[in-house]
Image (cartoon, helix red, strand yellow):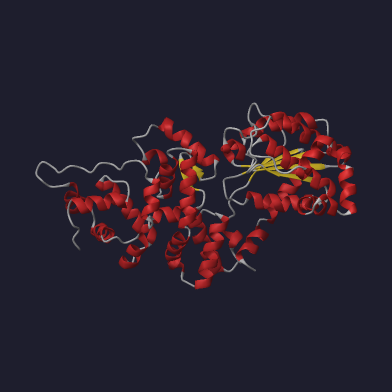
Length: 457
């Protein structure tokens, strides 16, 4: 059995819990951090509920405007009525080529969904215009009409997406009010939403439509035993890998499978992580670009968190009132996850490894778009900052690491040369940066190049 199959089997109780909650409650919510596998669990639960409910599933990720959301909603309602095959005929065949069964199903569509929704479902996708909010009235009414005939489950995935997209996106709180007001006298209408923590208030906040209604289920990362085959050696490996990935499903599975392929010892996990950091540099670059697009401090804070620094402690020169909204934006967009009070980590540990390794100078420069900290001037007695740190502050091991850095070595190369783990090298580098009064390896090398060469110890 593959690692992913073991994980799927181990999360079976969570799927059953979702199914049972939907059956018992008219409203059910799933909430969890980014990349804990919410959508996979949601899909598995919805598949089991399809025999009991008519399913209308809307993924709000990409529903940029009310008119586009209304079009998607109309299409999903049509799929529920005429089936997937008949709906595909609308896209793949010209009207004169439609089978008789498809023609008959479309003729009865206005009576079941209303003429407005039936027309919208057969129209091409609308342009990415803003549209008027009342365009959603037709799909809401059609959903209620279907629920009067048989049990219907309306699934809203990525509830946070419109809020993260910003101006022009559908008002999700208003949408939930419309669903509630349109279906509160329809006992057959059930609602299942899936979202990240920062957007939970859209459905359950003090002014939300489902305040204190239904039940919320919190989905946490899978535990180490979810990846294990129950052998003692495999359990030890899974615990070690789980500690390094924080339970992130895809990163844990990838690291375990890589370890199995290379058949390495437990102590070689750091070298595998270094290889994965190199492999996922493009993913890290996309994260940096996304972080910058959601807030002007986003890339700077994301890189600080990836290097194990707190966002507030890493940037003391920036007011907390300015950092807080940036962190909310990063959290809402799934770029970071909360690990404790004022404690954060990258949502994807593979991104943290790639950014922490800093093997790509171009990536580092893209993240640090702000000017670097000025270098310390020479002391009055002529001794410069680097000489002082070399003679008084830096340990022998730190001097050796600094020598390797001066020669342009990456973190992984430094670890291999000195026989250290990658995490140990990164920890020493953070201390060296702090003692030299710089932020990253680029600034540290600038200190070295402009002041004193590093001698071997």
